[in-house]
Length: 209
Image 1 (tube, rainbow, N blue to C red):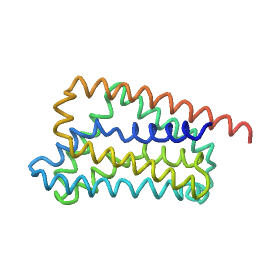
Image 2 (cartoon, one colour):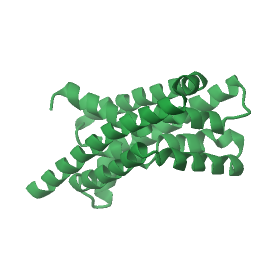
Image 3 (spheres, helix red, strand yellow):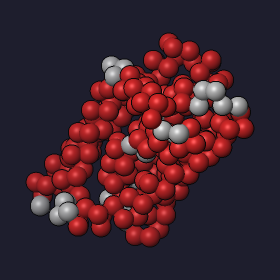
């Protein structure tokens, strides 16, 4: 696969899994009562934490799998099914409801200064889907140069997420309920196609082995 296609597919996979437009209303929900400066502080901290988690898996994902005796093709199949499940939730608008429940619980139990770490950074941004996608993609980015490229892709996705948080109020007003629904479903279909490709590649590798 050409380098550009590999990089572009990785960027789309991680970005769609994170789903920044879908996080905009949730960001406003968990930061309600805060002024603009406080929301900026929360968005910076959440973005940094959410970058570190998948970046670690981008660099050490293969080693982590080796410790547990899991082959990359096997993880590719399992991760592909997980991403497909997330895509299914996005298409049928199940994921947003689940995320809203997570955010509501966090507001009542956690101190306001900790919401950047939970639930924003984990699990709303760097959740199981994003982590699984990162480990899957690490198989296509070998060597230190490949790992650096994947980390930079993650950084770009988190920069886009941070920008969405900064513009959350405007984005939410612009998209509206209908716009968010259409965008989420479209991204879900794209993620489903990518997930099927992961499963197919994983099965092919397992059969070859």
